[in-house]
Structure formats: C-alpha cells, structure tokens
Length: 302
Image (cartoon, rainbow, N blue to C red):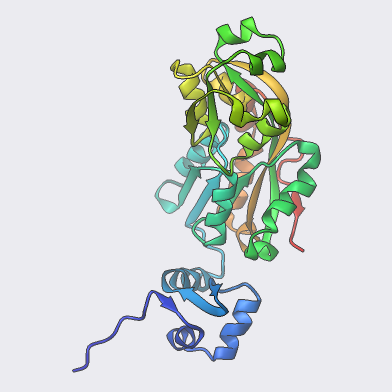
C-alpha cells in the first residue's frame, strides 16, 4: 500500500488546483479577485496550505461564522470592558477575543487572515476619513475591506500627577528632561505624539526614553509604577490608572474588516454592545469618548 504524501506547506497554482480539485484558471480567477490567500514571490504565486485550509473552512460557513470573532490592532480601555462582557454573554457558544498590539501589526494580521477585525487610529479625527483609507491601501487585500467607526477618543500625554503640577505647557514637558515611555513602531499613539510635538528639536527620538511599551495599558502602568514620568496615550488610560492627563487632540478609533465579517452576528453584537447604555456609562467614568459617529460605515473599498 502506497503511503499518502502530505502536500507541501506552500502550494503552487497547479498544486492548489489539485488540492482543491479546481481548474488552474479558476485559481487564477480567485487570486485576481483577492479571495484566496496567496502571495507572489519572484513572479510566482504561492499559497500557504494552512491559510488555504482556513479559507475553505470559512467559505463552508458562507463567510458568516457565528462562533468566532478575533479582534486585534490598537489598544483601548473601553474595549477591554466591552469585549469581555460580550464574551460572557456568548458563554461557550462563541469565542470573542481582543489582542491589543498596534495599528500596523493588526493590519498585517488581518491581511494574513489571522484575525477578523483590526482596530486602527492614525492621526487627528478631522483627517481620519482620508488617513485611514490611505493607510490600508498599502495592503493588497484592502479592496475587500471596509472601515467602521467605533468612536472618537481624546489623545494626549499621561503623566505622574506631581510632574503635571510642575509643568503647565507641552513645551515645558518636552524641555523638562522627563523619563518617557514610548510606543513601538507602527503605533498610532506614537504617530500622534510625533505630530503633536512637530519636528526638529521636539522629535520624540531625542527625548529620554526609559522604556518602550507594547500597549496602551502597559504604557500607563509603567508611569503608575514609577518606572517613567510621562507617556503618550488616551485620557481614558490616564483615568484608569489614576494619573494626570495633558490633552493634545481627538482622534478616530475605527474597525477595519472584510466585508463578509461586517454581517457576522458577533460583529453586529459588538457594535451594539459599544453603543449600549452600559458601555456609555462606562465611557463616562473613563472619560474622553465621543460616540456621535459610532457604527457608521466610513469606507467600503476602492
């Protein structure tokens, strides 16, 4: 009896056609429509078998999986309350999870079909309708994505209360020789800081960096524990950790997701949970939120 040979990890067009029992022309059609996960290397298409398997599983559910919603991307204190409540309501019927990283890494995971939705923020709220589409256009899958507004939130600097009492302006804080917590590359918070400070002498790279944090909560926690004096972040995070806050502006916090995910029951439930009275009351406690555009679809591809 002949042993069954496992297909390779990365399939060619011919191999993926055989694997799925399709004609090669159909595979090329799926690639051109952006429907099948693949990548072009030196002119040759390759398809990760693991992602092809996942794509098939989702396709078999009509793109409407009701038992999973995996959210990644930018961190937010309110989402840390909203998503566990939704997960608790679902109990064992569904998995709802939130992995806070940064905007760009979240989009890379979305591009790789590793997550269902990505939280993004990339500059002042008044420029978000241009900036957010411009950001996601750098990803090949963007034609199949949409942008849905979660809320607006207030950005600024999170400070030790004693530091805040001693300095009254942004320039004073920059010139004071304080220990800063910075965010990693690809962070919308770090980008907001860079624009608030401007260029030249106020470039963030010239400030005294005590640590680099990988989430909003980690940044605030380092200040709260005395490991640093100041960090960029939201008013809500400052409030959550009992710290002072210096405002620098408002930003849009949005979801980026595939069109099919928009109609998934769990995503609709997430939007309803964000807009619920319970979440609004929680946001009032945290401070620095505006729900005037919550749930609005802002962009639906080119």
